[in-house]
Amino acid sequence: MKLTVIGMDIAKHVFQLHAVNANTGEIERIKLKRSQVTDFLAQRERSLIAIEACGSAHRWARELQKLGHEVKLISVRSVRPFVLRNKTDAADARAIWTAVQQPEARFVAIKSEQQQTILALHRIRAQLMKFRIMQTNALRGLLYEFGEVLPEGSREFAEKISGALAKIANRLPAILIDSLREQWARVQATDKEIAVLERRLKVALCDNQECQKIAEIPGVGLLTATAAVAAIGDAKTFRSGREFAAWLGLVPKQTGTGGHVRQLGISKRGDTYLRTLLIHGARSVIIKGA
Image 1 (cartoon, rainbow, N blue to C red):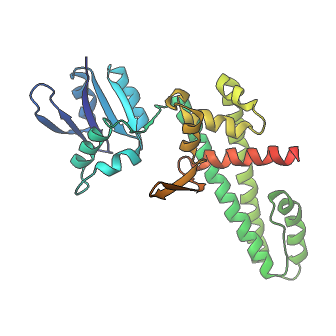
Image 2 (image 1 turned 180 degrees about the horizontal axis):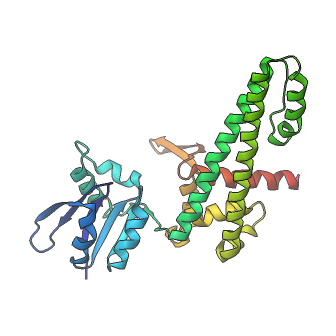
Image 3 (image 1 turned 90 degrees about the vertical axis):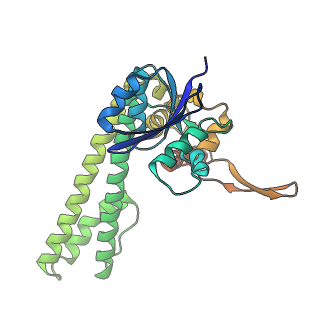
């Protein structure tokens, strides 16, 4: 039995649904508040519900699957060409309804709560890493103004910073030295927070057999293994290894006309964070092999 297709545009407060009655051809445009969505769809016959892969989409996909519906998370790139006129909630729902029925539509695997938890830890860690880089760069620049040149590497910087502060302590105002030391204390506190998150990710690695299998690959460590399993979701979503590489943005872009096709650099589409981890791991293997 062919399922009725429902395109659902989700938001913080108001949800828009678009469907076509298979018997009468009547177009249904339904606007619901967040609190009404579950009750409304619980009363509908089993349908194929398409949702654009965006914030809270995975949570809603799990909830709707519990109601017996088939749910597909469709890539934003697959939906965008079908928003024909003004961008409204109703237009987005109609575009999702149209896009999910296209043979070349690209879908996103529905993630479990455990996978989303691991990704959340990675996001927090990545944010803290940015904070640390900003703080150390500020310290390096401020000290350079007073004649102290510090190395760029984090380990080398940590080894030299105390000596540099001690050297300028006698000739610069105490208010500046105290402020620089407080900045360095914040960097050290950030390092401790990053270490705590990495320990939690290590626990997740030990509890997940898929992460352990991926970690056995040369060049793949704690961060890459946990991020890969969490970001991929269900590996069966990809029909081949090349499709997975395309999802990561590791295949070349193509351009051509008149039968002549040119291969360009890698597309760099998809998950930037995971792609960076994989490239870094591959480089480390090459360096060790050399």
